[in-house]
View (tube, rainbow, N blue to C red):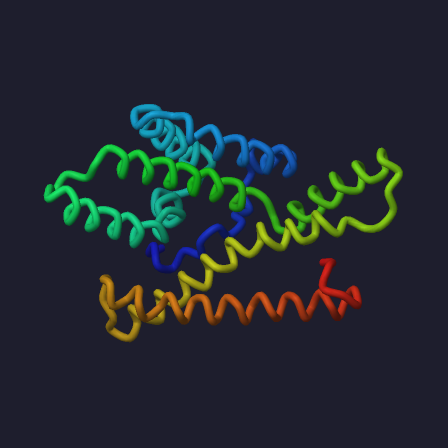
Amino acid sequence: MAVSEITLFRYKNTQSFLHKTPPLLKIAALFAFTASMQLLNIYACTGTLILLFIISLLLHFSPKETFSAVRPLSAYAALLYITDIISEKSLIPTQNTVLLLARLFASLMAASLVFRTTTSCELKAALSGFEMSIKKRLGLKGGPVISRQFALLILFIPMMLEVYNQTEKAWMARGGKNGIKKLTAIIPIMFSVGMKKARDVEKAISARTGSGTGL
């Protein structure tokens, strides 16, 4: 399977310890991991990237699937590198740039592990159950409004990445090449299609609940 054929952040139905881990625990761990990455130096970040790659292999994700998770950052990495060349007048990127990219790559790889081992229904059910338990203890009424909106935000990320993947495939199929021209062509389309998908989701929500606040 080519990298361009892999749908980013799509759930993969395999048996692993991470698939069996409670979704709420994975979400909490992801936020804690992302926050802790800001405290690590370049060596610790590099070690974390290697560890995440090994975990991905143990979870039966191919190297192509693993690298596809960080592919959307490649354009941003290239832009930072070009900025370094211009500002520092050196082909060697600064340590701050390398550290920033290492943190971003590690965070995105961790997020990919969560989304690839957790279905959208599991995410929504976990967040809704957590909010309802809090409301019950506080004696509050009403449905899980906050968690529904938060679930929409979480689910919007893989949806946008899937749109990016599909748009890039269409660009390459028409003979397009990698580069700045590709980005200027597909990014506006990606956001346009992504916003349309978001509106469709909102309409579906409104049709089911009579408002735009539920799932």
